[in-house]
Length: 111
Length: 117
Image 1 (cartoon, each protein chain N blue to C red):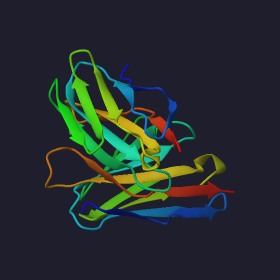
Image 2: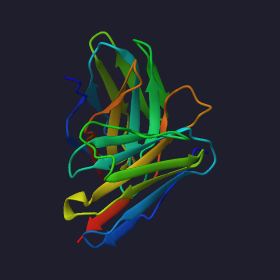
Image 3: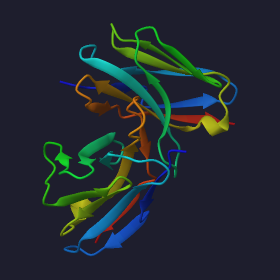
C-alpha cells in the first residue's frame, strides 16, 4: 500500500512560536519529496523539492529535512506569522514518476 | 513566472448537462498537465494525466467517458464533465509541469468549484 501520511492533521500555533510537522512516505522506489503550501483561496505553491537523503532546504523562516532511509520529512517554521496559516501538503514522487499526495497539515496561526 | 490559470473558478449547472473547465499555463510550455479532484477534508486525488498531442492517462476508477480530457496545445488542457450529476460536485484543480524543468514540480491553477443541482 502506497500511503503518504501527514501529521498532525491540523495545528494551532501562537504567533511567534516555532512549529514543525511530519510527512511519512514509503522508503522504497524513492525519487523525490515535494512540499507545497496551499493558502485559502489561492493555488498550491511549491516550497521545496528534496531528492537526497539528509537534504535540508530553507526558504526564509521555513526549512525542511529529509530522511529517505526511514521515510520521513519534517517541515519547520520558525517564529510563526499569521501569513504562515495554510495547509502544507507533501507529495512523494516514486521512481516511476507517480506522485502520491498526503492529506496535508492545516496550520492556523493565532495572533 | 510559472503561472497557471483555470476557468471558470466556480460553476453551477443542472444535472445532465456538461461542463468544460480550462487549464492554461500562461508563461511556460507544459507537455504534461494533471487534473485533480479534492473531496472534503481529503487529499488531492489525481484523476488523470494529460499529455499534449496524445490521449490522457486515467487513474483507476476514473471514467474516461465521463471526464473527457483534451490537451491540444502546449499551454491548454480542458476537462469536460459530461452528463454531470450531483455526485460530481467537487473542487477540481489542475496543475502543469514545466517542460524545461527537471524537478517534476507542479504549478497549480486556482481550482474550479463545481456544483451540480
